[in-house]
Image 1 (cartoon, rainbow, N blue to C red):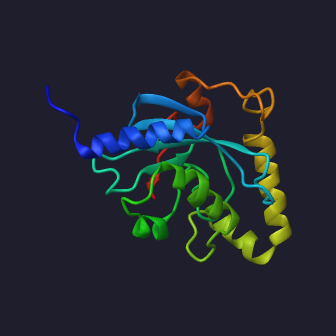
Image 2: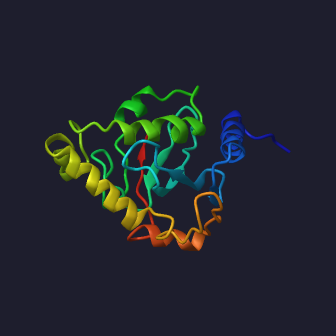
Length: 184
């Protein structure tokens, strides 16, 4: 009987650490494919929002960054509104095997939502609003949170007592049931 490769052990360890750090994780096909419930960062217009983030770990993880995508809609200059793809070129270039999955949800995504880069947008409308009408930008984000990412829309009772979503309900969060994510 052969033992798992070092990369596979690291993948398994990182997913278990993510679950143990109180992130709500729904495993899809195996430990390399899952959905994480992500809460909007405090003191941003995204606060109060809940997003389902699909994560796909490549075979060469952690030496190759994970692919991530938002399954429910979000308004942000660096996230494609239609597909949920995330433009994180800077992080992809900076990714090293020293990072783990907790970094994605506790640092990278909160930083991205708090400090968008409107110079390299995937959503030109969001970038233009951010640059030229910041109050309208914040209002539109809050409208999206209410419409697509609120506990009521997601069928959650409240933020402190959330139920785990099932795989069959994931199609509710994207048009085609498959989120296209970009690598970090």
